Length: 53
Image (tube, rainbow, N blue to C red):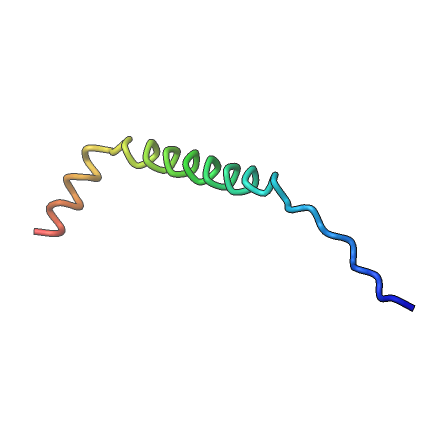
């Protein structure tokens, strides 16, 4: 009795979409954090600057 070859598996060609989704999510979060940090309170910022001096 001859041995049978295992069925060949097709390569996963759609795996890039997961990486793309991860990168887009990280970029979105990065820009949200940047925007949140851009709204500084002048009084708090000057108090921190004085404390560092």
